[in-house]
Image (cartoon, rainbow, N blue to C red):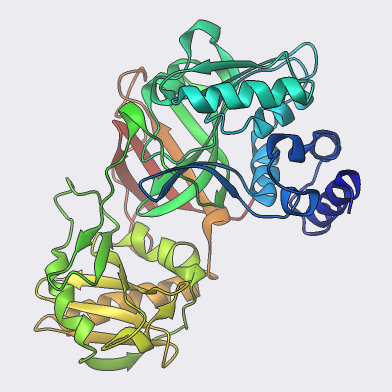
Length: 412
């Protein structure tokens, strides 16, 4: 198959699946040759709808060319247009920067940066080969943005961040848009924010996503904790410095498979570990965790198969825990002295999610306040409560110095 035919087939599938919704994004994907940014692959591989790792350190992927369907979703979220000044954080191989260059046209400016000199050199060479020599490629720490070319109408991160950094907001023009893969209670979400006032942002759209993590000053060491046997890992929904973070050791007894089962209002799925039910539970209750372990032995057969790893959603309460089971379906298993309390809380969250119409990431609304930039940082964040509670139905989450207020709404 030729590169042109492979590219046309990919774009047609993205349009058919609703990933591409506007003529401008379609035209960019149809005209920017992805295979020139992946010179080691044949056309069929270069235009497959998969992410392609381009740099690995110690067995961990630190840079990749993103999955085309996710690129399309995020370009639609970003809404870059003719004449816009755009900053991309995470140059990778340069393909997304080329797409941005096509969207902003000759009157716009695209600056893309990466923390590694070799990636910067590679992106520059790929952009030149594809005829996008007008894109500026710079080396730098993305956590700090790029002040020399600010302010920007659009800022897009193609790496995951645990918070909205004040540097990005300070470099964003009034009314501009910031798009980033943001970790919210353990789930990574592609959030498109509008800059509504100094130090204030409001989400326009939210989608589920998965990206490599930001490195440098904004790096996240990760929140996973190993259980005593070394074979099971726990990812708390709360940050490690949160006073409400649960003690993951209470989960150790759950890995033996022993416990008491009770039916709940809905069955879960692998997708529900981070989106849908899992996101709802993690936003609502600081005791929620994700549990990962080996594919065999003890509790493993009852949990969800995550590509050779067993995983599930859990909740820790005191010296007890509860796990959502894959088999039997729609079942929660309680363990430990406080297991019944944990099971009751988890069952209540499942019921609340069902009653709310089974919302997912696209239904979430996020408002951000950067205290160092906002004129009245406390305004609009008091008296928030979680889903299923009383009050306005908001949850306030602290991260990277920015306060995030979360509320469930209608998908947009």
